[in-house]
Length: 168
Image (cartoon, rainbow, N blue to C red):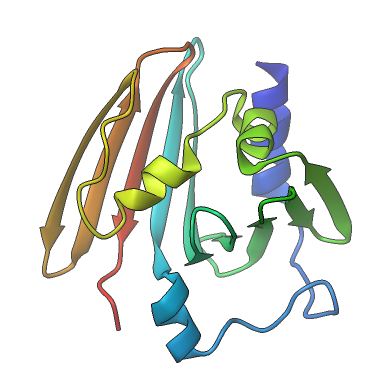
């Protein structure tokens, strides 16, 4: 799990991303409604010995086919930005840009396991499809939506918790 440790450390220790040509400004509110916009907190725990965990704030804009995921520290520092489209996915950290064949390949490199991004995105507003090897449950409250996802297979087992803020 050296890859996971390195990936998580990269996310946790990444410097502030400057406002530069690498990053466009967030889409306008009307575009956000058309493509999807979510903010909240994300926690990922890898159930191995020893367990590894990281928690970040996030902002997600887009659809399963194309979008952007911003990861922020508790202090609001941008840790990383993931962007994807049908051709590829990119992880931007500081001045470093890594390109991957897909979002699944990107999550494989960072977490040691490919995460089913399209299926997980389907759960952000309402209950989505079942996922083989995963147990998913969710609840919607006045303070937002909570999604609990636990993967048993393939190993390593994962626990993913998303706390999605209510729409503004």
